[in-house]
Length: 426
Image 1 (cartoon, rainbow, N blue to C red):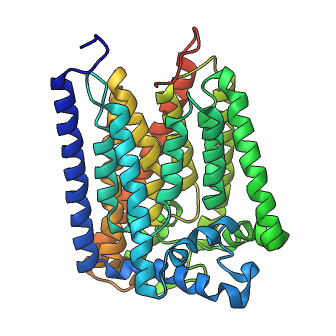
Image 2: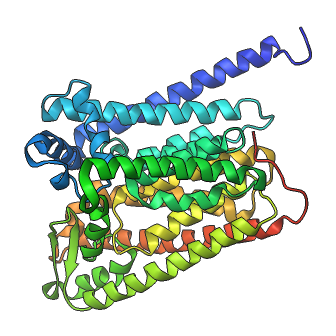
């Protein structure tokens, strides 16, 4: 046996570790399935909406199909039908299986990248537990796609930066906002050209394909859709009015808007919409400042890249007038890669607090939706409504704290290195 060849003991330990990870994944996902079949079946509504829209596509045309999403999303959501789904139930099953395959794939990849470390980071376990706390919603929306793409972009950055850039562009074709994550890929100056080539080429191809398929109006329709939305009840900026509902329920009403989200209407809502718009501008400037700092840095490692992506996602979420529960999934990819880097460095107390807080935020979000969402959307008085509104408020305050910590950590890490450029963790 050569010095570089794994010993029988190390191979046996690796096999046991792989088996343990697989069993943990299966166990947690079976619990999620039980929750879905038990108390959370109503969360399937969006998948039914996807099915109805892609089914009607031949009759109404691409320019009137899922206009709230970028054009490539329509192609993505046609995949279950191409795989044989012919009715709503089979579409749901195929959709959930596809999301589960993405979940399992990233879990395996994180475990594989972690296997050679003397002290394992637990990145795969963190991903599994974070997404478990989000609940079955993980498989009932497609937000796991940009989360996995963000993680993959980080994991491939050192070896194939062009692919990393392309993956970020692909994420932008699904949810728009991931385009900003390219700032997290600026760590190695000698890799930046590859990142930009991959990002630019993929973006141009996707934009051209979208234009050819649906035209200009369809290309920009997601931006118009977002601009017309009201104040979603779960958003950070709706918190004051949602708490005020507890004292003055007769002054407010909550209803499902044409934008497929529950929005609040009543005194102070207009003011909070203005505040949210201002916060979006400030958040955009903060992200630009972070990107400039990343670009001007003399080199940083994978941990800094993951923290930068985490901060960008958090700023995007808290400054928006909308905050759907599946947005928490966006954090899972960069955070899991951040955990992966912990095997080769010492985490700060603030970083550890962030990782724990993120798990708590996932759990609180799950409690609000879908478990007790009816208590939040009912504007009438009652103990259940009071409890869940306070849970929602706690989640939003926690999200603000998380964002401040993530941004502060990213800013500090980007400015901490002054010597030779360090390679990303391979």
